[in-house]
Length: 431
Image (cartoon, rainbow, N blue to C red; front, side, top):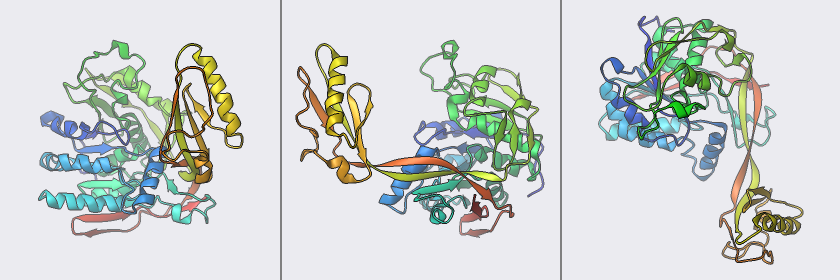
């Protein structure tokens, strides 16, 4: 790891908490990054367990896909500005195909007359070895990797780093490692950065978007600002946002996000085990909350693995019920429907919707009209009514968590080719 390049805090912003988050956020964060409000890095989290399934289905249709396409669109609007402002970009938008996204970014940069160094990080994809590792017939199988592959790419000069499945916090931890020169055993510092990443990676959830006290916020038309973490060399940090943006950064909003998706005081990650009970929060001025005192220890021997499988096919129906006694009509309709699908009952969603599913496409198509509009003729309820089925029978997905033993070999190869670099994080073996 490189020697520390600075003792000042590193300013890391976020512009996405999920695939489909506010499209304009990347441009907004870069436009606000001026003067004392400049950013060193802008990060984005695009991956969730469901997202991996969506990207897996994309790959079934087109092997060149498998990444978050909205990220590429955002970069087409913001790459020139990021270059002008000197902001480096780190994102897990590579999904199942980080190399493919890097290639597209390279082409985009060339079309704009720009020449950033673009890196991708892989090593998380276990799908080719799923049967060998006892993971079943997996459409996708990805280990949650840590931040040191990202840090290495940044150390080697990357302006843009896209990854596959890393932990959500890793897109923040990687830049902090590269900026401060932390080692793999800088557990307290790493733990602090993990908490910073955990707070800001969900976007505006840290600035009032996931806040039960939202009635106390100024609820005008100003969009909520996306969060920024100013991470110091000791792992302490301040959470803030660009001035003039909506929402609020307070002890309450930060605490609400801090306690989001945690199960105990020990927060397990691929780089460090973070003691959430050690965290101290304090006010640091308007829209500024300081976080310090975070303690960390050795990470666990196993990594989390997300597996997605195809679970057959499904179609969705909609029933329109009118007149009086709607609850009774819905109950009678459901009784008739389930009797006709006794070996494959639908999962009822609300009063007027349902789904049918099966392992084979024929199970779903059974009884469907030629136009796909009326599926089960003969159902009757009193009064004018209608029904509609989706025309397409869509493949359904099933996802489940697994674990895999890590290989504690050092970070693997790195090489540059034209404007792109490739970083491998080493292998992950099944558990």
